[in-house]
Length: 268
Image (tube, rainbow, N blue to C red; front, side, top):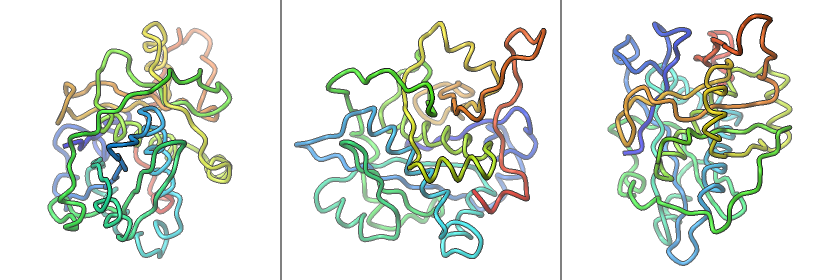
């Protein structure tokens, strides 16, 4: 399964992303389902699918039904109080139409369509989602994507990891969520009102070490599928989170994004 978690070094004892045992394991476990539309005759481009999945996660986090007294708010709180899991499945034809009939949000990219659903119990998926396949999400880019816009958020992929599209979609969703948690309310609103612009690109090998040590939100995988436990998979490079290096800091940092403080939890 493309069920992935992240790890927060800064607040390991309380983090919903911690890969080791924690009190969060005692809570009922939930998962955020994402379904990608992959028709045989017209599959989406890989990069567009990754970017659309990240925007789908952000759209769910920002939706009024997900916060306060909204109809999805309790499920979102239960999900964030336990492990943060996301699972990507694929659908086509009648499968996609059945998925669209369930409560959720469809986000459309240039060629990709991804529907995100409110969290469900880990062992209690709706039947029409549970029957969908996890495999078959291998996608390609017909043409190399253009360089990322440096003035907009970029989710940088680890260049040394070969992840399937489904796995990478879950990971970019994690990275987008970490960035969302780190932003101020003002920056969140501006990002939402702009339509959540972002790019997903593989980092240059020479740039990856800098990205992972400069204090930007960093996704670390729990190692359930495809990559080794603790692998760094994605860095969320949002312009509002960039910090100039402190004098004498040598470019290092220490700010992996963690769970939202209790006062901001309802916003997630």
